[in-house]
Length: 164
Image (cartoon, rainbow, N blue to C red):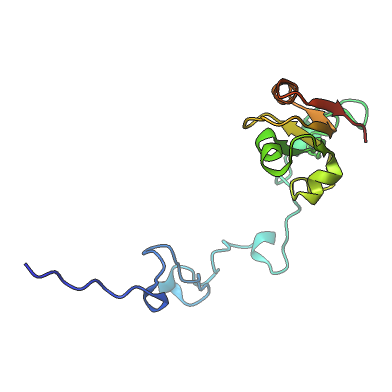
């Protein structure tokens, strides 16, 4: 039985997946379009007017959530203001990365991690335990997970916490 030649595949034959692309909604183009007359804005009121922007967090006159929830004293308490960013940031470096990028006997510091392309951001470095370590390394970082410290010490190295 003769097989049909497959269609030639190339940039000229690449198409978006069926149903993945939609045409732009054209409002105010007559009753038959489904978005004629008021153009999907309903009747009257601020929402129907041009230039309307509702404030973020505005709940139509209902007491907004940032006023309904409790506030605890002190600026550094995680729940003192419930919608602000109080998360502490660290950048993770895994033990497997240390195994891959450093030689036995090396001293690993945030500066050497940056030079190795691991800890590029300005956040404190935390060493995590994913992977295995066979080399003896002196690792200086801002934080260690318990398992990472264990793996470093099991391989004969030392894990030293630095501040700042």
